[in-house]
Image 1 (cartoon, rainbow, N blue to C red):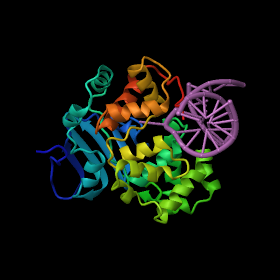
Image 2: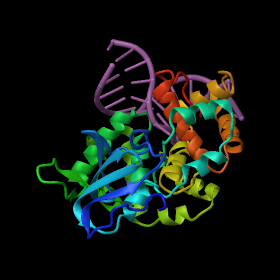
Image 3: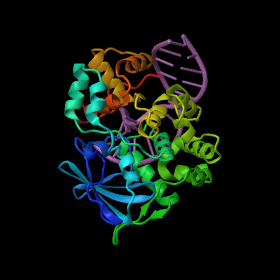
Image 4: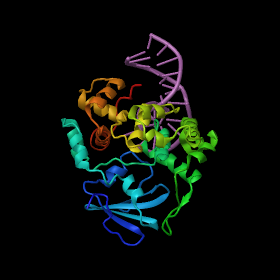
Length: 303
DNA sequence: TGCCAGGCGCACA
DNA sequence: TGTGCGCATGGC
């Protein structure tokens, strides 16, 4: 049975079980890719494409529960990229000691494939914010401007991520009231362009990497790093390599003996060194630095 | 109270 | 081409 195939196939149900070898659900959902997951009683709860879902890992299986019955679980298997063969991906990565150490420390960490608009909007909010603050801002935006979604009886209310049209209709003051500060006009402009079709994220996904990156970076408040996050976490560009303060620190410490290498040189190095699945390498290095090495990045990312 | 965060944009050398 | 700073906010 291929990975990602539902093990139990009863009539439309609120539960499903998937084979998920080599899948570290906790690392994947807590590694700063997505901002709507909460650890609850040994599992993880979140909202994907307007569906509340609870996930928990059990050995080589992954159990899912929703609030609304359904027979088609592709929305979940695609989000979790359950069909991706991790061993094949890891074989493409360079065999250098730092990366192999990161892979050993975080084995099972996966990339997600998120809804593009939600991913873009979330990372516009991420600029110079800690992950917990991004989560708070996203939660507030959803609560105020998303739609209520079905959740189990007695469960707290859950909301979808607000549409581009809804956020485009908000004033800057309303958005700032969600705690996003100077990012408010950036979010509003991105929402406006997506809503009017001036930026077609599906079309961006079909472009080559350089074109797609350039299209995203024409948005105010979206530079190379945020663009690469959207390319990697939502649009399927596995070569994209976002360099934030943590990844810059990882590259400088692990590959350049702590020298003050410029961001441009780090990008040049990452582009040539890590290969077609460099985005995985980036995520392993990021999670490795945050969870097993020093507590804080020391140097700011140069422009 | 100061520091800093999954940055970006701009001025300046 | 590289460096430094301001921009909001909240937790430590």
